[in-house]
Amino acid sequence: MSIGEICNRKVVVMQREETIAEAAKLMRDQHVGSVLIVNEQDGKRVPIGIVTDRDLVVEVIAPELDPDAITVGDIMMTSFVVVKEDTGVSEAIQYMRAKGVRRLPVVDAEAKLLGIVTLDDLLILLAEELDTLAKLVAQEQQNEVVARR
Image (cartoon, rainbow, N blue to C red):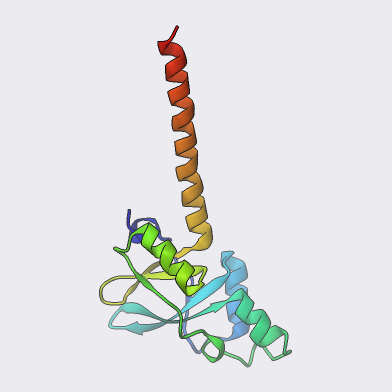
């Protein structure tokens, strides 16, 4: 299974000129912990940075800066990592672990933003897979009981 098959295609994005106050409101309204900062190029969105709820706290709230005067471009992490849509889920998990990231934007071959996968998304997927395996064991036991009567 590829990461492109499971990624969330509804990505919350902003432009670098938008304010931190706008980012905080957008995160709250969309119930997300991050926004991707994108450039629009030839009709495609290319990710150029990411701002997380932690960035808001550490970079703006704690030092008591004005969230209406600071833009997401001022504090965005530009050294974020992305993964191509055909990357396998296991490989993406290993990549996230190696890079120490909880969010992984998904792009196509031309670096166009397609979606995002988060640690939460992967935990849900893996929990569902484990549940399926547990049900298989229970079904196998039930089949044996029926067969041995």
